Length: 187
Image 1 (cartoon, helix red, strand yellow):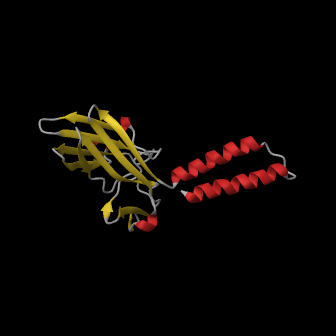
Image 2 (cartoon, one colour; image 1 turned 180 degrees about the vertical axis):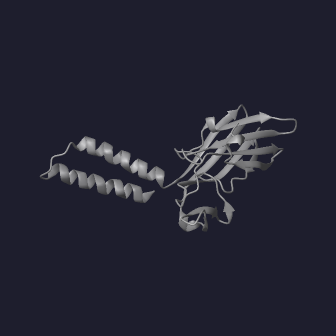
Image 3 (cartoon, one colour; image 1 turned 135 degrees about the vertical axis):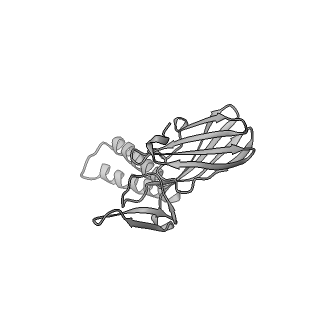
């Protein structure tokens, strides 16, 4: 966090020098632009935690982090004789992009649900690029009460490589019963 403040301080000093020097620039416009730029850079390089209320007494918490390829083992495989694509991250298939050699932008680190104050972690292995703005949103999820427990459905897409996941939650335990990029599962 300190480095962002130092960056903003350095930019303010630089812009102030421009204001007092030979180049006359509208200082307030530059300040606004600088703050917006720093805020954007800060958001791209951090972990975001979001909480949304699905229904009364049901709270979903998601943690999304900017993807750092140095923290992962990335394996590629031959798609055809002309190119390779990333097929495994940390030894498991990954979801969140069409077949490509480009690394994900972000990763869903954790998803948990609290149903009437009973906290349950959900399996998010292999889930990347959950959406464009790096936070979970209410319109990505639906929950339904079933005979025993709940079914939680999630739709994830950052514009390319959409996928769905489905979990069954029963008395503080959960199991991911589906993760798929097959459009027939998008319901």
